[in-house]
Image 1 (cartoon, rainbow, N blue to C red):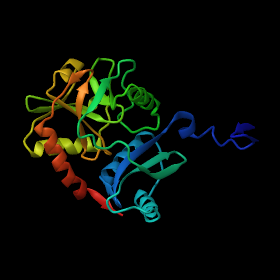
Image 2 (cartoon, helix red, strand yellow; image 1 turned 135 degrees about the vertical axis):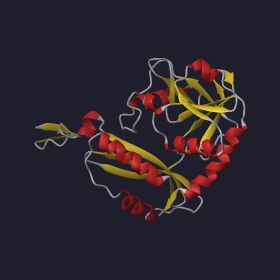
Image 3 (cartoon, rainbow, N blue to C red; image 1 turned 180 degrees about the horizontal axis):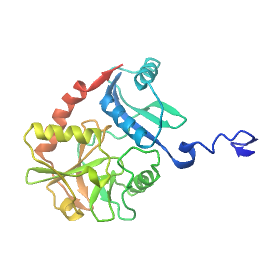
Image 4 (spheres, rainbow, N blue to C red; image 1 turned 30 degrees about the vertical axis):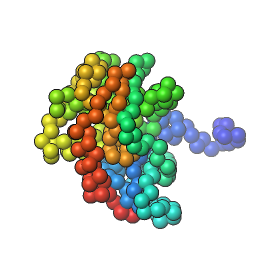
Length: 263
């Protein structure tokens, strides 16, 4: 006998439900440009890797589910929205939502998070997301656009909902994946843009002093309109604009169209 959502029942629905009991599940958030899902194949490939890691053994035809959902939605050609997919051992949900994490042409204010360490499970988009969520809500209450985590060794790692880059003397630096940061889809695309334009990219371990001393700082995320957003100020230190950021924004527009799945 168990009590579940207002009822006493004999069937024990939840005791073996790993998503409910342990937060075993994963999600992806994908930009929809009209009826085109930007970097859809890359997002689904990352979700399948997460499912394999979490031992979620399910065969899911993501293409067909998304196709049917989009066919039943009224979506304007130029309308940009977010497609969110959540998978657990028992459930799958796919929703289309308005995007709130967009373009900020004047740059944004960010702050290092110093009252909690980076989520060391951050290398997958797990539904065990409470730490990122709470940190992000606290940062927003204080008037900041994003918060930046550090790990226990004092290395800068990633934002609550973004990857981070900084520029110094024409070289772009970003925390490396072995720090258990999320292998961001757009992070990877940006690194490709930089290398194709002969701009040096260095992945490594960086302290906050290196971030504070950078010429420019920017964030990346799949829902950002231009792939990245410039940081105007971090921890009270102003950061400038940079031609490299403008290059990324320009080239990203081309990539979006080239790497979209039309439904």
